[in-house]
Length: 235
Image 1 (cartoon, rainbow, N blue to C red):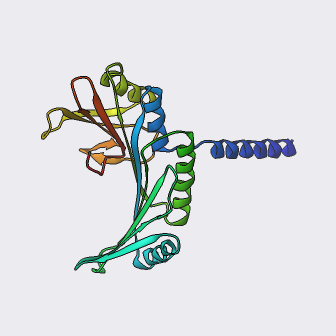
Image 2 (cartoon, rainbow, N blue to C red):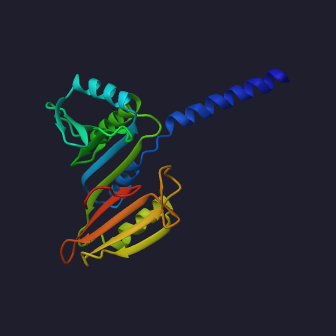
Image 3 (spheres, rainbow, N blue to C red):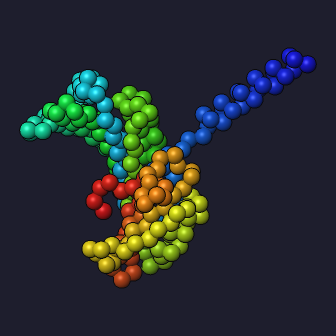
């Protein structure tokens, strides 16, 4: 009897491990999938990984990056900044890196990696997945902050109500909040939260991990900029 129980537990552990390996959650891929389900094309996308570290750790990453990428070094009264790029990058996913070392020892240094592209298909998705996983293993720790965003546009057939309801349906959005842009009247901003994604921020005591900006480009068309947990670039 004991032997049977042990075998059953062993099989259960193997099954759980296989399921964990087969399950892959990535916010950018989730957003891109929903956009494509809405019969829209992805105009551009970007993922930013940021992490503050101690100075020796950042200097170690800088030395590693110097071996593979072209770099520039700039300095001002507050910090030293390194920027890295791949001169021979001909793939669909573009890589950029930067490192900032403050001169004030009270502040931590920071590493920033950017993956971006202007198209999304099976090839770019596989390339992105490989690169983002490699980055997290090689340069970052579990404390890395990841921000993802993409842009798409509708046409006279696909309208914003249908598109936004698709996100609500797929992600089971909660704490949805809408506001009009105070500068541009043809633009509105939507915040929400999904429990399907682990990253989140708190805004006015509510969890937030998706932000959608809807901008009217002409009488019949709208542009969508979707980010998680929030948009940190200009839109």
